[in-house]
Length: 497
Image (cartoon, rainbow, N blue to C red; front, side):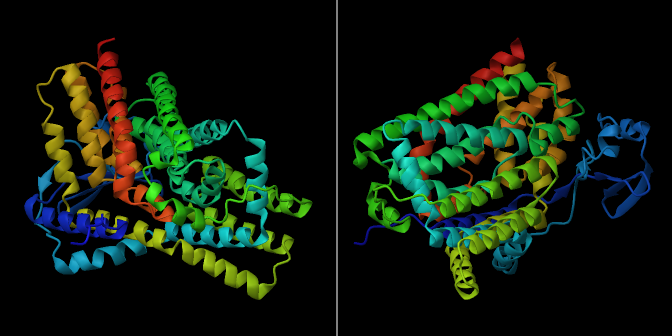
C-alpha cells in the first residue's frame, strides 16, 4: 500500500475553501451597520439594511451611535475604513456559497490579491538576475567565512531585525523576498532551511503579534477602541522583548541540534533536494570583486528604500514592486547583461515564484467566500455575547481565544480592528478593565494564530522551499504552546495589577 502524503499547500487551501463554503449554509448571514467618514464633504455615511444615510460628522453623532471614539480619529485619517456600529446587528437574507462560488473563489482571490502577487513575481525576477551575476555566491562565501564559529549570531540578528520591522511598521508580506536570499546563507552555515524559515517567519510573526507602533494593528485598533495608541504601549513593549527572547532561544536550540546532528532536522529527508534547489554549498572562498560588491549594495538598497517608503512615505505594493523592478534593471546594467538574456532571466526568476503567488491568491479566495457569504459579522456578534458575566481573568483569556478564531474569518489586521473594536472594546468597561486590554487580546490572539494560520503567509513561505505544512506544524507547535501559556499568564497578571 502506498504511503499517504500530506496534501500540498494548494490542496489544503482548496479544502478550507470548501469547508467555508459549507459554513455559509450553516451559519446565518448577518451584518452590523457600518459608518464611514467622507472627507470630501466632512460627513459620515451610515450603511445599513437596504439604506444609506448621510450624517453630520460631529462628536454628538458618534455619541448617539454609542461609538466611543474621538471625532479627530476620523478627520485625521487614523480610521480610514468603515467601522461596525454597536447594537446594530441584524440578520440578512442567506447567501450560501454554492459549487459555482467555490470554483470561482480561487480566481477571484487571485484577482483581488493581484498587487501582492505582482510584488512576489517581480521579486522572483530580481532574484533570477542576481543569481546570474554570481553576486549571491560571492556574498554567501564571504559571510560564511566571516561567521565561521559564530554562526548563531546570524540567527539572533535576522530574527531580531525582522521582529523590529514587524512591531514598527508591520513587516509581513515583504518578507517573501528574504527567503531565496537568506536560505543559502543558513545552509552554508550548516543549518537547515527550517532555521532560515523560522528566523524570518517567526521574527515577523512575533513582531506583528506584539506591535508597538505598527499602524496596521496597534495604532488603528487603539483608535477604533477610542483610546490613544500610546495607552498600553509599555505592556506591548514588554511582551515584545520577552516574546522575541523566547522565540530566539527556541530557534537557537533547534539550530544547534541540527548543526551537531543533521538527522535531527524535521526536514532531513529533503536535505539533498533543498541544497540542490538553492545551489552548491561549496564553501571555498569566491572572490568578491568591486563589481559584485556594487551589485550587492544596489540589491540591499532595494530593501532599504522599500522599508523607508512603507514606514515613512505610505508606500504599498505598487511602489514596492517598482523598487524591485528598477533594482533589477540597474543590476542588469552593472552586470553587463544583454537585453535578451535579461528578459529571459527575469521571466524564469518570476516563474520560480509563480506557485507561491498562486497560493497567495487561493488563500485570498477563502476570504472572498466568507465575505460573500456574510458570515463574518455573525461570528463577531455571537463572540461578543459569549463573554457576558465573566470575571476579569476568565474574560481576558476568553477574548484571546475569540480573537484567535475571528482572525481566521477576518485575516486582515486592519480589517479585524475596525470591524471588531467598536463592538468588543466597550465590553472592557463592563468588567472594569481598560480598553487597551482588548487591544492586547486582539493583537496576541491574531498573532498566535498567525504562526500556523493556513490562510496567512505561512503556506506561501513554505512553498518557496517546498516544505510541507505538516513539517512546519511539527516544528512550530511546541513554540506556539509555550507562547500561548506565556501570553495567558501575562494577560491574567496584568488585569489584576
